[in-house]
Image (cartoon, rainbow, N blue to C red; front, side, top):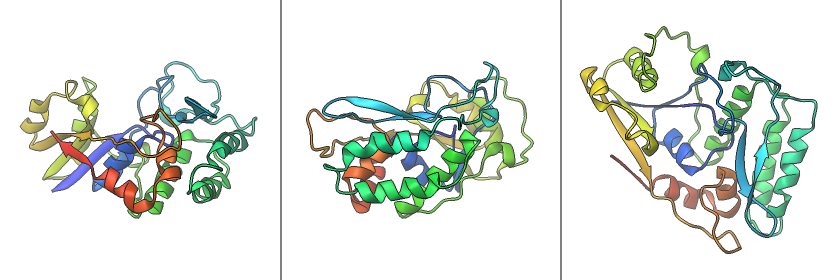
Length: 237
């Protein structure tokens, strides 16, 4: 059985996304659909000074509404890397792993990026390696995989899985439970499950706890063993 997960390439996503990477045999970065604004491809949330949260964000060049994710480029006219790192300085006095996480980001940021997909791929691979489960994440537009045209949104994953071999199990976040037609998958001998994370609070050195932040926040406050325990705390439905 080969476990497949397929997600759009998110920027420093929350714990559940990283858990899908860990618990799939192949995690595909799906980049050939329209870029949806105000999502998670170029931004995520971290703690704000004193209380609440704020966005860390990669600026993008202007693009039309029909532009595909793979064709969206980073606007390098501003020093966005420096800005993001400066926004994370608030962790310096309170987070035990600040320097480790800062060094990890700096290692990726040393490279010049034009593609938001490539940046996110490198960050996700670096984070996976740091957490002890190294992965190479294929980008769908680079796979040269000929698939049937999707007639409904839940068929992209179906058509990709059909091309990846026999005995495929597809795993999707729990948010797709009411969105995906399980019968389509079973009719094609593909098992489909939905990952329901049991997210826990951890000590952010403040109250109240801010849930659902970027994996960066989790890494700042927790050691690798504890993070892996969190990543394993889910059920498949």
